[in-house]
Every structure is written in C-alpha cells, then in structure tokens.
Length: 311
Image 1 (cartoon, rainbow, N blue to C red):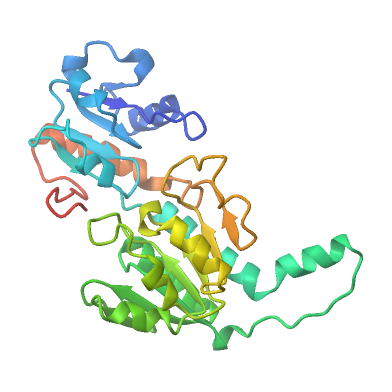
Image 2 (image 1 turned 90 degrees about the horizontal axis):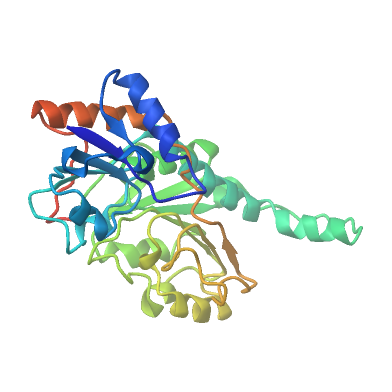
C-alpha cells in the first residue's frame, strides 16, 4: 500500500514537503509524489486539495481520498470516483485559528476605520473619526462546526455580541445560537458583520441570493471564508450598489482563481483575498499519517465523510 501526495498546487506547500513530513511521522512508509509515483496500482490512498477526473482512472486500487482541508463537495460530486472509495477531510486547529483571525482582522479593519485613516494619511490629513464601539457590535457566524465555533469564541472573547446560526441546534457559551431556515433572516437583520463558514451542499449553494441579501442589516459587512458558491455574485453586486450589505470581504469565489474580468475586482465595496484565510496545516498532517495507518490496519478513519450528506 502506498500514499500519493498530489496537491496540484504550485503556490502552496509543495508535495515533497508534505511527503517528507509524513515520512518522518511514519518511518518506512511508502509515501510518493508525482515525481516518484512509480507503479500506480500500488497506491491505495491519495492526499489532495482537489480530486481531478483523472485520479480514479490512474489509481485503479484507490481506497481513500484524503482532502488536505475541510471542504469536500467537489470530491463527493466527482462522477468518476467509484462508490467504494472512501473520503476523509481534515479538522485541524491551525487553519481554524487562521480563519478566525481572518474574520477578526477584517471586522476590526472596518470597526477601526482603517481604510479611512490610510486614505487620510496619503493626503496628509489629520481627520479623527470615532471607531465603532465593540460591545455595541453584533457579529453573526454562519456554520458552527469546528471552524465556526472557534471563530465565534474568538469574537466573543474580544467583546463583540455574537450570534451563531446552524441547521441543527448548537450551544456555545456566550453565543446566541439560532438554527433552522426560518432563523437565518432573523439573524441577518440584526448583525453588523456576518461571517460565513458554511460547507457547500445542495442547501447552501446560492443561499445568499437577492432575497437573502435584502434582509441583511443596511451597511453591514458580509465575510465569506467558506465556499464561493454560497453567494450569487451578480445579486451581491446589485445589493452592494444599494447598500445592503455595505461591504463584502471574500476569501472564496464561485470560480477560483477569480477571472480577471470579474466586476468583483474593481467594485469599491468588495475586498478580495485569494483563498488564504486557512493557509497553514499545522498539526493536521499527523491526521493524514494516522489515516494511512488506519486504512492499512482496517480500523475506523479520522473525520470520514458521509458521502450521502456531503460532509
């Protein structure tokens, strides 16, 4: 049995670096990269960022696809992946911390009028402007799983009023938790900032359409670090032109990389970051190594995905 590391990315951690890290955790394990792939029939597990249509064809004895991240919607929906192939995802602390920090950074950027003061400095202008008072600010977190709960707790610790939303009931100390479809518009109408960290499922694709955007608090800020297909981008641009919401910060978009002709790049009420909020894997590669051992031993996997549910 062999483990293939094939991220398909050139601007992130290299395949060789990931493979070297796992080899140190599993001395003697057969860990390969595209440069050392050898006999593909020996590969039982592949660790990827995204699964190509070619992977199942090239790896005839594939048993497990390990996502080097949390979102697995494109893997689950891959029509070429045989039903018997299992899928696992990561629930590491490092990217959860990073995504929570990303939310905090862009919320504070708006709260503290940083863009205003940066513009004033360029014009050599001394223009005091009162920041927004944190205890008076309501922040909503959509999706209260591993990452969303971490984000909600961090925001609450800073002093924001925090509301959370999920499809099923959740409890987080100090956070007002709502659940169910009817509760989402209630939350959106109260929040000054809305942090979305939802998975991509049939229920969430296009959830933020014109109707949903219209119930947001006027002037509020929408931050998305979950999945780009959550938001109808054409509807978002029209909504921003009307001031509801007042600003959007997008770390994910419906197409990535975002096409150069997308109006999101130049809209004055949009901030784009290139899918960098949860950059570091941290200790998560230990879970990849552990799953390779578990697969070999026939024991339960860590963070296995229910392919029917999509996560």
